Image (tube, rainbow, N blue to C red; front, side):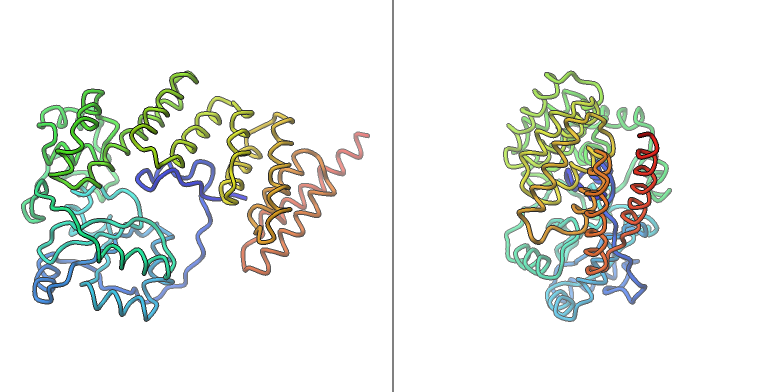
Length: 398
């Protein structure tokens, strides 16, 4: 079954390597926080109370933003804790002019993102991605108790201004993406490490030149002192990931492996991103034996499910299909809590390897799990119909 295989939240457009995880339907409800429409009002309230400003940066199309608002922020204990410690707002990042400076300045390109500012409106930091209530309370309390870097490189919100092409991009609710050549020209005319240069680097990393990349690598300490080491690292990582993404389409295997090693030297604790990029490369090049080698190394059920689904969707090598099927079978046999998604993937693989009876049996078990957990088993029911048709065709051919 389709599931999200996250590369990194900084690259939301690249995270769904194979398919997007279904987002639970969320009935309409009263949002947990008021909409931020005027920065001056938010700043005045924060300066009066002395509390930081919390901004739930969301978009209309972001399903997990809705889940977070309904299932985490609206819980009384969570809401009370946040209200006691912060001035809390939500901010539509595409249809609200108050969001434009925030989104461009801090490179907010993944949703949901949660921005926390000092009472003066200076960035403290960002938290990214969906969390259930327990995870969120732990993350937020840890964040609020931590020391946060000064960021003297960022001007005040009211002082931020943009070249015409960037302003037009913001005014179009970030739909009319500026021409890459124009962004490259603005970048080239900006002093390396300046605020505008960093804005371009955060929002348009593909226009950075090899010289710019070298600068980012060499000047992490200086950029960290101006913008915070977290943002300096984010910009460098985002740029390196975009480089890997581009190379996955054009490089030889040797060139790509070298680039992966460069990434791991800079980010040794992010093997997940390196793995996901290798998988993308192997899939792009049809190197199924190597992709299944990666699959065989995994222990996490979500990863096994995602990679196995990729094999089911695109691989026609019978040996590698059988390997992926065996890996799913082994995981299910040793994990009593194996859920609907991986059981459904296993059933699909069994069908593709023409093991009709086993595929039907596993499909029915997947449907039982889906019904017990309230998940939609439409795909699996369609699979059972497909198994029936293919088995009959196979029998007629005999």
